[in-house]
Amino acid sequence: GDSLTEFGSHVVGPKFADATLKNTPLASEVLRATDGNEEHGPGWVALLARDYQWRTTADVLNRGFSGMTSRLLRADLASIVASLPSAPVAAVVVTLGANDAAEGGVPRDEFRQNLDAICGALKELLPSAAVLLATPPPINHQVWPATTGGKGFGGGRSLERLKPYAEAVRQAAAGAGVRCVDLQADFTTRLMHWADTTHDGFHLATKGNVFVYRQVGEALRSAGLNPSSMPTHRPPALAAAVELLDDRDGRYARCRKR
Image 1 (cartoon, rainbow, N blue to C red):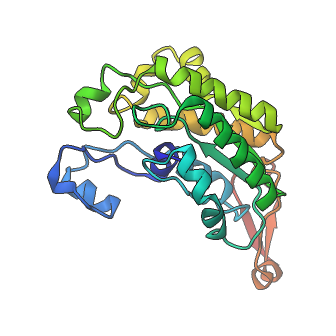
Image 2 (cartoon, rainbow, N blue to C red):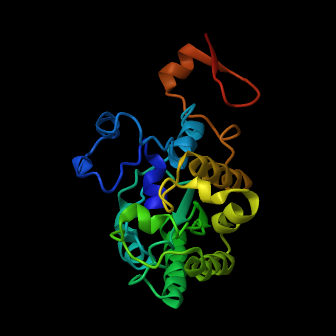
């Protein structure tokens, strides 16, 4: 997906205007450079990883890329899937639309066609995976231009401009028979102050990350992928030496030597 997914694993959100952070590779270095003032995590992908990797139930991999559009993902999908480990994939969450809807992005009709093609390709490449399409969250168009100084990727970002693209995601999900995580509707109808969910009008702050985590987590559980009920991977030597006791809620492992 796009930066909604990429930054879902972030710890910090560096200010775009701060040249001292340019090409900074590590979150720890950004924290030092900003004196810890740009903390916007944990991201929603990191929170899901906490749940699913707690007892090695499943690995959560992030394949989000800033600037990604449906056109680019359609072209790159096979190579992205090829980069995944060989273990069976249980679910894929696709986040697209924000960059497609920007000026110079992808027309709405082509966006819908690309989503159809992406869903079809995922079913072919990952036949055992549950596919979830997420609508793009709303954008605070009054804050985003001021944050970027008019230099952000793609202009013309607004909630009104995003709405037709969110509808295209809903239609594509229904047409492909996959689940839709309707973030745009959920943000605007279930949160009293959705404009407070970003730190720059576009990218998620802590509140937004937690909300996306809850919505995606709910969709995954409805697909039968509740981390507390999924099988737990235990290396054979460890399993023979240490018994993992039933803790009822699946959250906290209790062990004892055999």
